[in-house]
Image (cartoon, rainbow, N blue to C red):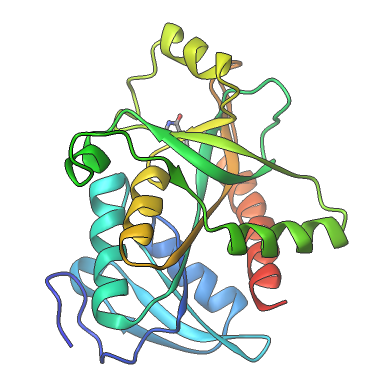
Length: 235
Ligand code: HPA
């Protein structure tokens, strides 16, 4: 099966696929956490892998950054490769005072400044929400393990460098936890395909205090989030 951006046998992906933005993160996740790993696609170096975690088949594939790229890969995975559960694992900039660098967030919903969802929703505002079942699964796991994971709303922006202070204030007034660039598009794409989607994020930047993780801290924090996500999914 070949789609414009993925070249792999039609059964190459597991029903559950983790989606980091960075293809080298996908490689790191596959090599660090999965067993019996095969690289199943590498078109444009957007690497995808399938392996097993605690005996269950799991895939992991990079999506690139931003909603157009994330939605494009997710759509092809759902339409042509039978992926049914899409779990974005990424980083975000925190804007809520309760959050610290390295904290893990689960996005129950995602607002956006993008026009992507309106274009496929007759100009109206679609309410981008996580799959309740996937969210429940993750929360059950973190509650049983007493892990400090924040749950709330995120903001998916098209502008990495465009967060003016007054815009951040508006987001804060609505209780939004953090800013990232993919979830609103991913949640809508999953809804359209009757698939399940969830986003789990590590706080890599604090947009209020202008602090950020070092590359080494990013890697450690990222691994914690992946372990939580994989254990919740196979539980
Ligand atoms: N903005 C958007 N996406 C992000 C950020 C940010 O500040 N940090 C990590 N992902």
